[in-house]
Image (cartoon, rainbow, N blue to C red; front, side, top):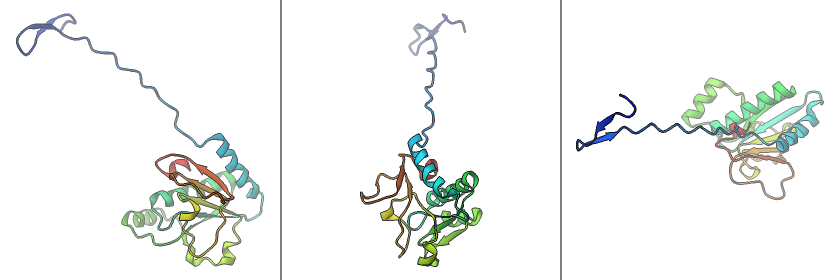
Length: 179
C-alpha cells in the first residue's frame, strides 16, 4: 500500500493511513555497581589479613538462610578464594528446611557448617568475619558473640550506631547482586 493511499475507516470514509511513529531510542543506564569508596573499604579490610599465613574467614548470614543468603555466602567465598587466595567457612544457624533451600544446597553443596557445631574457641580463630544479607541484630550466630568486620546487605535496616565494622549497603533486589 502506498504511503499516501487512502483507506476506508469503519464508516466507509476515506482516510489517509497514518505514518508510523519513529521508535524512541532507549536510554541505557550502566548497571549499578558497588561504589568505588565501598570497594576500597572492602579491599582495605580484606587486604589487611591477606598476607597472614592460613588466614581464616567466617561468612555468616541471617537465621534460617534462604537462597539469597546462601548464594551470597557462596559468591563471597569464591571471590575471597579467587582474588585474595583466602579460604572461607560458610556458617549458618537454624535449619535449611524450605524445599527450594534443600534443593539448592543439595545441588550446589556449599559446604555449610552449623554455627551450633562451632565452639567459642574455634570462633575466636577467624581472622575476618563477614555478615551477608543481614544486619548484626538479625545474624544467625546462635549463642556466640561475633564482632563483624564487614556487613554486606541490601535491606532497609542498618546496623546500630555502636557497630564498629564496615558497612557495604546497596539498595538492590538481593545481596547476591552486591556480591
